Image (cartoon, rainbow, N blue to C red; front, side, top):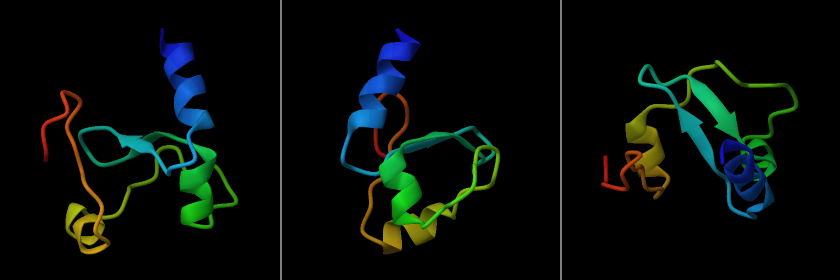
Length: 68
């Protein structure tokens, strides 16, 4: 199941990344890497603050789909 989910997220044209409870990046797709112009593996790096994400007009959701 996890492999299928990773494949699906990887194929999306939209930027998608996930973080752990401390805000470190756990997964991301190529569109997310292109959005932030990342040329190296960013897994484990701290993502930007939720405030900055909201300033960009993006939405943040919990795993159950509820807004964060």
